[in-house]
Image (cartoon, rainbow, N blue to C red; front, side, top):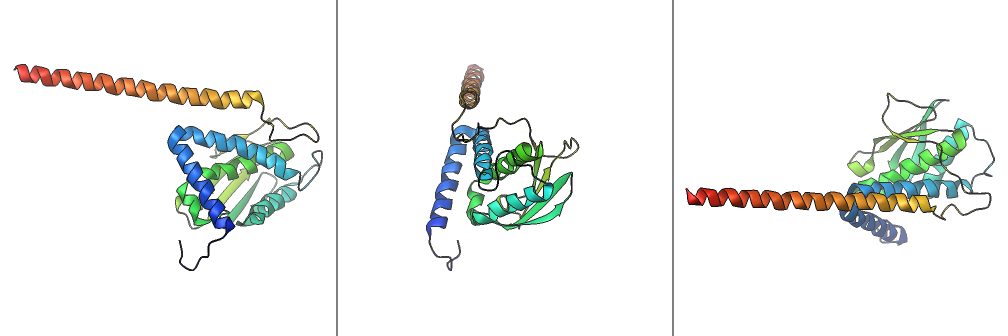
Length: 216
């Protein structure tokens, strides 16, 4: 961190969140991204309430304006690079987490799921490709959001997302979402146990070979 950068609440919270995310990923592995994805989808729906009524229709221009504004409102430096009826491209020279995001690059899933979730709800479909990421050492971010299926392009698809009832709270988690995350965790635990069993079997085989060599 630069010696000229003063300590403040934003830096403190950014460090706290990125370190928690880093620790969480080390604990649960790649499934940490799924947790962030689900949180981002919910967060995006909550953010929409600051820009419109649930029944409002959006143009592609309105969509791009909103996703750039929401990022810049929380400390990012985003701008619209390209936009048409099929996709939008936004670029950034600064992340809301700052360079600290490199401590937990999988937090970029929050950008993907917020952008993709809003696209799915307001545009009917979203496919998000994080082409460049500050979190991965790139000098800036570049995000492409497709409003129609683009099977030849990379990206995570967001489609047919459930919406909270009118005046409802999007952060009231559905039981099926919690169950899904629990199931993923259980799969992860089972995989780890299976790997441990394989290691024990391998150790036993090595020990057996050593004993045979000793007999010779």
